[in-house]
Amino acid sequence: MIDRRPGLIARCAGLADVVAAVRFSRSHELLVSVRGGGHNAPGVAVCEGGLMIDLAGMRGVRVDPAQRTARAEAGATWSDFDRETQAFGLATTGGAISNTGIGGPTLGGGLGWLAGKYGLVCDNLLSVDLVTADGTVLVTSATENSDLFWGLRGGGGNFGVVTSFEYQLHPVGPVLAGPVLYPFAKAKEGLALYRDFAASIPDEVNTMGALLTSPDGNPVAAIAVCYNGSHEAGEKVLREIRAFGPPLADEIAPKPYCKIQTLFDEAFIRGRRYYFKSNFTRQISDEAIDTLVEHFRAAPSPMSMVYFQQLGKAANRVGATATAFSHRDALCEWGCDAVWLDPGADGVNIRWARELAKAMRPFTTGSDYVNHIGLETEEGAARIKAAYGANYERLVALKNKYDPTNLFRHNQNIKPTA
Ligand SMILES: Cc1cc2nc3c(=O)[nH]c(=O)nc-3n(C[C@H](O)[C@H](O)[C@H](O)COP(=O)(O)OP(=O)(O)OC[C@H]3O[C@@H](n4cnc5c(N)ncnc54)[C@H](O)[C@@H]3O)c2cc1C
Image (cartoon, rainbow, N blue to C red; front, side, top):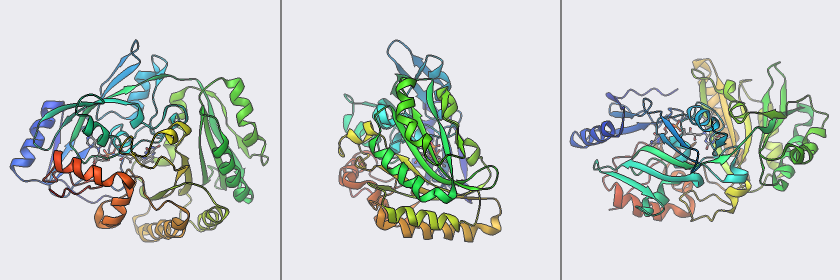
């Protein structure tokens, strides 16, 4: 789907390579893009004709079990990160697909299974090593270059190339987790149950609700949960969603945290065609549910899904201006993931996603998640600005300070005014 070809790819092995690549691109006035895990669906990591700074060779993760922290190189995926941290029985909030990079989610906010208890990925960030647009190396944390540290927690890839991230870890797992599937005939009641359940849960649990096609080819409604706490208490909290229906399948069971982190991997294998639309929502109305169910019925591809991914209770408690990620009052992100195989079917699938997004817009905050919105050429400047919410002007001031010539513009771009 991403038909762009960089003129040059700098396959960096470490921070010094990144410094050299940034300086080279400046002196030759090249368009720059940055690749972390390479998972961004609109493909912002890939520029046409310029220099792609590729961090995929930098995947080391070092855990300090005594301090419960981990330092990870910026090309690591959640699979790399979770594997190393779980070796010590530790984890932090991470994206829900294991081959997503840690870079995009951390810099854009980062929704994940553990966010009910520990907040977003960016809420667990302790420090960052970064190469700025003029090739300077900076360490940023709550006490060092703290203005930039604020901007890196939700402001995306606008301020430089991060070469490593340091995170706070927590004891995690095994978790009581998995999906429950309901017949499509009960889709509306199932999503209404999801809404009420998501609003009432304790911090230990985080949720997703979805309409999708099961492996046997039937459309179903699903609620997936991850309970990170005592399994006895979790059994009581989750009883309500397991009793409804009755379910077609109930796969909630104790499992290693790394297992729940791969729950949806097979629905998003590389090489298929993907087109995503999403928005934050504060509540889920009956009309929104009706809209989703009717449009899902008409999905041109059985691989497509619509979903709600909950922000998480601890993520909701952080103030809207405490980090650059501002959408703290959202209950969840809703999204439609159009997925198909035949390039000849691009038009019909993209149209389906766009029409559904348009129909859902009145039920949302109108703000996109930075990590899912595309380039300005498709989305328009107003939508990009709205993705940064109330923090946009403060982010512009940071952009003026750290990237006044807008070297890092091949992203969800915050434009400098200086
Ligand atoms: C199937 C699927 C599931 C997803 N699930 C979740 C989820 O559960 N939670 C969630 O929060 N998001 C989720 N996302 C969205 C995800 O956060 C974005 O796709 C994100 O951009 C991926 O990060 P990446 O590093 O792999 O991407 P890349 O494509 O490598 O990078 C995207 C952009 O991020 C910036 N960037 C990345 N790394 C760096 C760095 N080190 N320094 C500077 N800039 C950098 C750059 O602008 C870069 O172009 C999902 C996406 C997909 C496709």
